[in-house]
Image (tube, rainbow, N blue to C red):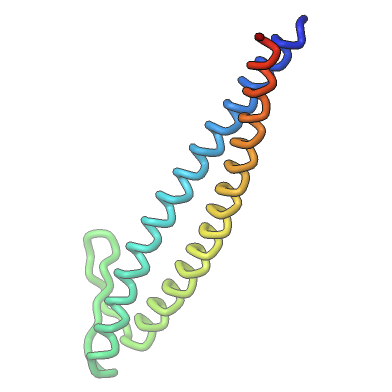
Length: 122
């Protein structure tokens, strides 16, 4: 097998890995967007809880049924969800940054291999 063929195989492998990184990156960005929407929704609910009295009747939708729930308990659940979602967003942002760095490394490797391949073809 010639050096050019080996270099071409390496190049194809790197391009495949780069495409996989792009897919993972896209999934992470999509997940972050979904979580950010959920976070905004929960923050709006928290604001509403801040505006109502402690003895107000609060209902929680479980499937097709509205179930009565204590306001402090419901507010605590919303706060826990906000905390959890915020943590997940931070985790995804770190993951996205990692994917960006890995993609940049792969790009550099691909450029080096392309340059080497072009030189071998001449």
